[in-house]
Length: 165
Image 1: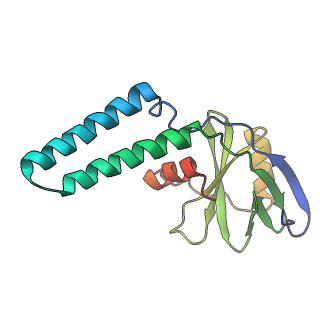
Image 2: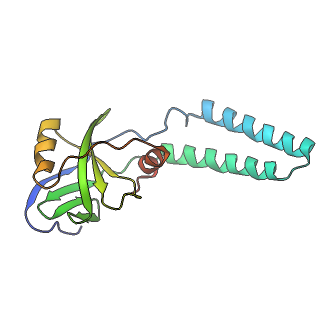
């Protein structure tokens, strides 16, 4: 693990979380829904003489398999280090020159910290804080300004699902 530059202010490991999309990944829901869509696409392809619907059926099958496999995997518990030089999430270090600010959100598992990157095209870096919101706000205000929360879009859900950092 790369060392956080300068003084370490806090260090913790993310609390355990349930995998996202577990509700739709239950075989009793996922497989009949995917099977129904695949059947519809195949029938439309047969009667409409359009082979692109066969491709759509394959995409639905691949998506269902990916959702099922990803939802059964345990979410990794990432080590977090906050220092005067930046924040380290897992093996990735974010220097203060890369970070625009932070905001906090209440999540089912605790306090979610979102780090806004200066390159706004990227999704925010998100992780869980193991403590109270007041402690978290005080800690991050030592190194970053608090910014307005960003709206959650589809890319944020995918980010959480595949744990991009």
